[in-house]
Image (cartoon, rainbow, N blue to C red; front, side, top):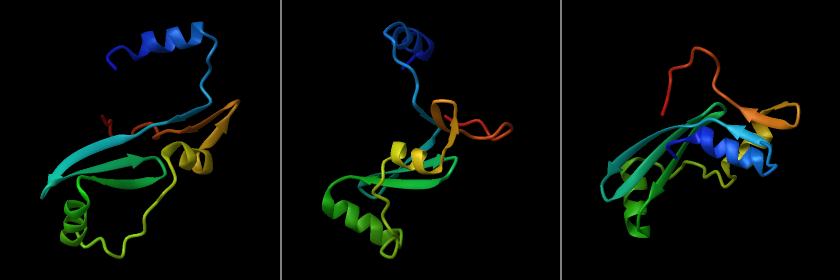
Length: 102
């Protein structure tokens, strides 16, 4: 979204209020025939592999991920678990001075 402030203004005008906020830094890679996404959140690093079943299996082998445990919780669920409650909002934010991310 190009104008996050405008969207926030619209949602506020409609009576919506934030309940959960998390920050994420993302890097995307092409590995073999899949897209590999690495997300950094304030409470950990997470990887997603997107592609066909066979290509995902091949990428997992190439990256030696056979023993890696899968996380099935969504980022909002993880934020509820690991975030900090500030008033009515649960937040997971990077600290001041952390490298700026995209």
